[in-house]
Length: 383
Figure 1 (cartoon, rainbow, N blue to C red):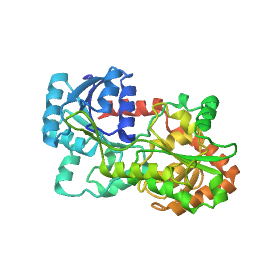
Figure 2 (figure 1 turned 90 degrees about the vertical axis):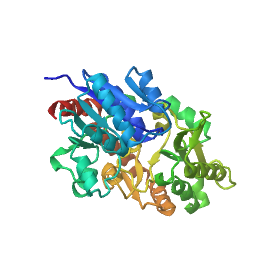
Figure 3 (figure 1 turned 60 degrees about the vertical axis):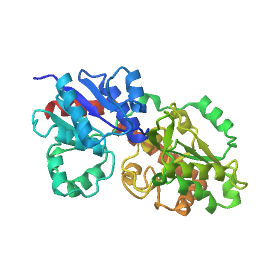
Figure 4 (figure 1 turned 120 degrees about the vertical axis):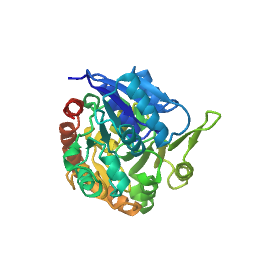
């Protein structure tokens, strides 16, 4: 059998869940006996992380790339490195990979879908998806939507749960106390936190606004931590970071609100932490208020740490929360609904503990790297 050589294509300057997980997946695949190459932007965080990990990275110069320019780069890499499989991680890169293998039936194409499956039934997408040999998602609900909305053979759809390094998800008692002390969390105070980009669609504003609906007594029992950075668009000619304007505006609003008289000491913005697990451990309740999250890595990680989750009744979050088994669901775009969930856990701490225990059991069973790598290596060989 011909040796498998994979070219991952992921053009993004951002560093959110998609980019972080794709990078982590590639690093772990590097540990298998399958040769890995990556085509990505030269100045991106993805490029820096994978280069440092010893992955064979092919740099794409500039601040952006067209589908057709990416297609040309992919074809060049196929020829130079004897690539047998393309693995795309964004919608634009799926286009480029499909175009690159238009007349190459010997080259196989795996597409990881991290976003929601909105209807794509036009002629162009029929042609593109005909050149995808396997579409992978961590969410059963997303794959159900794909069957309805994408012009792709259902036999090509694969459920591959996100892998996680289960060994690092354990209590960090000293770090927990140190972090809580740093933010002046009082004994018995409930710390509720989210781990996400500072982005409107992540419900960051609504999480902060949930404090408006708490009484003074309830507020005294609560802190909210918003852990994450602004959305990066790229770099300008001077090499300076360029942030997405809406994300920048939300960041400024958040800073002002955190310094306001009523919420000072109860609302904190914390930059993204590379070693973020102790910060999750420092929480009592995790929340993700996304308007339509596909299948959140941060929710998985919070469940791994035994934290009950306040999610939204949208996208793949209900699947992760398991209805009311591992957390509770708020309505999207509603700070008041989030405050109702906070109030529920304040009044029912035993339920919070029970939800956290159930969540850890479920996450450890479903999300681990040995299973994920086994699925992908077998998939490459099979197709």
